[in-house]
Image (cartoon, rainbow, N blue to C red):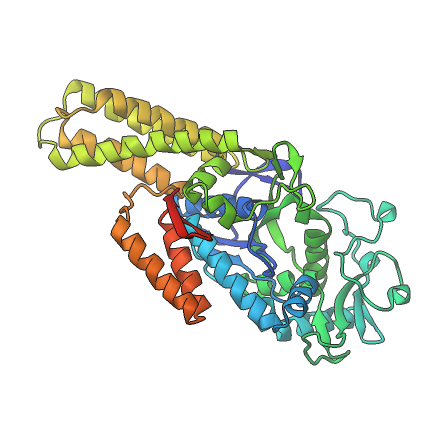
Length: 468
């Protein structure tokens, strides 16, 4: 299996640290709003990577964090007049609902930054003790030039760099020894959440969070660190600098980064009006369609989102699922009998297509070619499997299709359609919940219906609904 390693800029044979095991860290979202389709791409793609490793027999420990302390969270909490915890709990719940709807598997560990502060303080102190960090008036900075290999991931020359840390405004910028130095800890401002530390009552910088959570749950050196290519610099570069300076060993052997997502060939932006949350997409399409759309391009390539491409993805997924459902029905009625010579040849072609699927995935997780192999298998099934086929032939082709779809996270079990009477009953219950100001229950009912493809619209004439 070959992976394109951002660190070396080439494909490399995957050799795990521990035979049969994979340790994988994927940067998760900052939870201050519903996630958007840009967030969905790494979630879907690296979930697929995880699934393929598991298909190959690896025991995968998959860690994806929630950043639940951040300027944007604080700003949102102030705007709404609630606590930061109220904001983060609401949106962690929302993220998990969206991930479930996209069939993204639960991470082995989903650490929250606020629950790992002690580890961050400990690593920052280690960096100070080793001369890689310094404190000025309660702010702790990382001494970037103290790490000779800084820039090795992003291929940036340290002498050419502008100050690269995230958009975190800190007091005392002029106190930095060097404009390249970035924040590890900063003192609190009025009304902000804060924790006690040896330097000040305050909170951690963004970069230190992932270094600490990765080490705690996976160890000082991990197999794979992944995320969007926008994180290469400064976030992942800074993680390497912190982790390797503190721990004295390589941080990650392989770095995987997905390409950008554009909307109608333009960068996604709220100001351009082309910004879509997962929930907004779910109001028009099954999120299985969104997942299938994401798989249609190689994860490192940029991908363009448009209605036309989503419709094409819907049609493509329908072709696959229609073939699966047909085989499932035929399997129930098929007779036990000897394989015919034609069926024997069909099973050989089925095995060859499974190999073609694996070869595509072994080549840096080429999901586009893997999907192509599935379509070839669908064509074979549609042309060769009939009501006269033997049970062994039907089940062999069906089993292969189901397994390969599962690797890509495509659900092949038939979803039960909710009855109109049940929809009306839930809408009535929701209306009653709203009258009683039980908005949590009202939202829960809306989300339940949405997950079943039912879209509600509150109008002056009352609640209207339709099937997605």
